[in-house]
Amino acid sequence: MANAWSNWSGFVQAAPRLMASPADAGELGDLVRNAPGPVRVAGAGHSFTPLVASQGTIVSLEKIEGLVSHDAANSRARVRAGTRLGALMHILQGIGQGLPNMGDIDHQAIGGALGTATHGSGSRLGAYHTQLETVQIVDGLGRIREFSRAAHQDMIHAMGVALGAFGVLTEVTLNNIPSYRLRRRKWVLPIADMLRDFETMMAAHRSAEFYYIPFSGYAQFIASDLSDAATTARPTEDDEAGLATLRKLSTVLRWVPSLRRALIKGAVKKVPAEDYVQDWLNVYVSDRQTKFNEMEYHLPFEEGPKALAEIIELTEQRFPEVYFPMEVRSVAPDEFWLSPFYNRPTCSIAIHHDAASDPLPFMRAAEPIFRRCGGRPHWGKMHSLKATDFKRLYPRWEDAMAVRRDIDPQNRFVSPYMAGLFGLDQ
Image 1 (cartoon, rainbow, N blue to C red):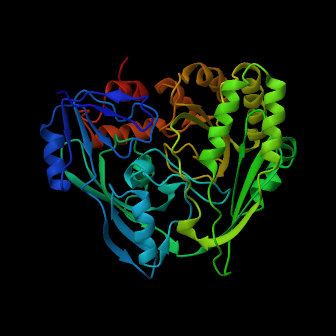
Image 2: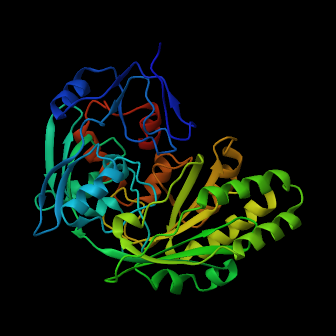
Image 3: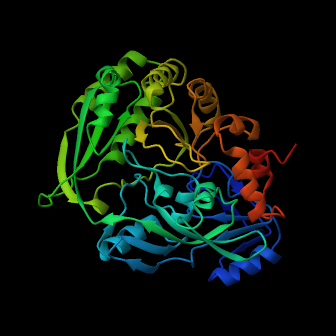
C-alpha cells in the first residue's frame, strides 16, 4: 500500500515514496543524502499550506525530541526540534523556565513552529523564532552544521524562519524567561467599541487579543498580565460547545440572517467574564477539536481595524456558512529576514472555515482585502502568493535566497510547491 500523509485538517494530502523517522541527526543526514527527493519534514501537520507535501520523502522528527541541556543562569534551554510544544512547556516548567509567549495550540513541534513564524499575541512580544540563540541543522548535503546568534547573527536572521528549506532543524537553543504566572481575563464588548479603541486596548496589556464572532456584533477580548498572586481555578473551557451552537445556527438559519444575528448576539452577550491566575503553561493553550482550514495575514498594525471591518462585512454579506470566530492578535517587530513581522509592528488577523466544506471561495474573496492593506501571509496558512509577491514584501528576500542556495545547493528540500515560493519553477 502506498504511503499516505495529510495535514491536521485533511486539506493537504501527499503520497510520498518513503516516510521515515530517523533516530538522530546522523540517520537524518543519511536520509537527506540518499532518500528519494524532494525531502520534506513533517511536524504535527498544523500547517494549511503544502509545505510538507512531497512525492519523494517525508521525514518525521518524532524520535528527535526532548531536552538536551539547560542554562539556569541565563534561562536558556537546548531542545531537539521534534519536541512538541505541549511537552516543551512541562520540560521548561520543570527547570524553572517559561516560554515568553505562546499561541493557543500546543500540538506543533518546536521545529515546525519556528519554521513557519508561529506566534502568540502581545505588542511587545515576538514570535517563537525571536528566542533563537543557536540552531543545529542537517543541510542539503547531509552535513550537520551549527550556527549561533553570537557568531553568525546574519545566518540566524536568514534561517530563523526556515520553511523547512534552510536545512532540517535538529536542535535549537531558546532564550526563555524564568517561570511566571499570568492573570488572564476575558470579557465581551461591542465590536464597534473594540475597533474604535483598538490601539489602546491592544497596548494596555502584556498580551492582548480578541475574537470576533460572525453575525454577533460582539468581540471577546482576552488580556493576560504578569501576576504574583496565588493561583486560582481556570474556568471550564466551553469553546467546542460554543462552536457547535454556532454551526447549528449557521445551518438552520443561514437564510434568515436577522433571526440568526439576534440569537447569536443574545448568546454572546450572556457569555460570562473570566478572571483567573495560573502558571504560564496553564493559560495560553485552548482545546481545538473541531477541524478547520485557516488563512492568516500579518498587516501593518495601524491597518488592522480597517481590514477587519472589511472582512466582517464580506463575511456577513456573502458567506453565511462561516461561523468560526475571527482571531486578532498583535506581534512585535523583529529582524528575521523571512519573518512576516520583519521591521514592523503587526496586527495579525486569522479567518477560519469548517474543514468539512470547501474553504477556497471564502479565502479567495478575503485575500485581496489583506493584500490591499499590505499584508504578509502566515507561511503555514492558506495563501496564493508566489516568489514575485514575496520579493516585494520582504526587503531581504534575495539575501535569504542566497543563504538557502548555500545550505541546499542541490535543492534536496525543494518540492514543486516550494519551487513556486522561491521562483524556481520559472
